[in-house]
Amino acid sequence: MTLEQYLNILADKDQPLRHADLLHLSGMTPEEMGLLRRGWQNIDAERRRAILERLVEMAEDNLEADFNDLFRFCLVDENTEVRAKAVEGLWECDDRTLLTPLATLLRKDPAEKVRAA
Image (cartoon, rainbow, N blue to C red; front, side, top):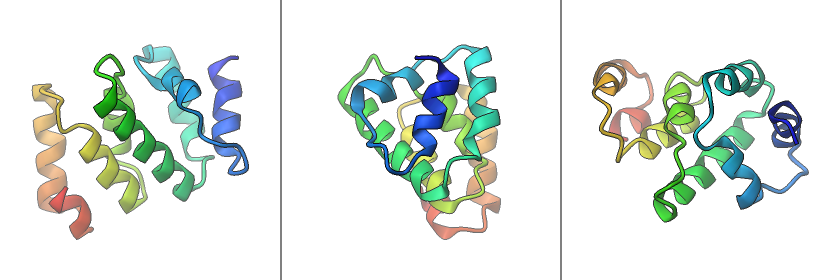
């Protein structure tokens, strides 16, 4: 299954979020992230939140799973819950380039939930 096909499945709220399939979002290449960026907004906000919630859980349980690029991308999502989950997903990331985006969220995000995360 291609990433484009999988994004269509992710967008379908009637399809269950399967653990094994969500691992396709781990360690994506820059090209794959480009595809994801183009298709992400086609996914309903509640579904995006549910996806991130599952990815955060998976990252905690599986040290080899790397969703950091997706979490970083979601720091600017239009949905408050998605942004908060993205921050939560990055809690173990020690990439210094996150300092500025996280500090910006802390100072300027309109949602208290995101600033608290």
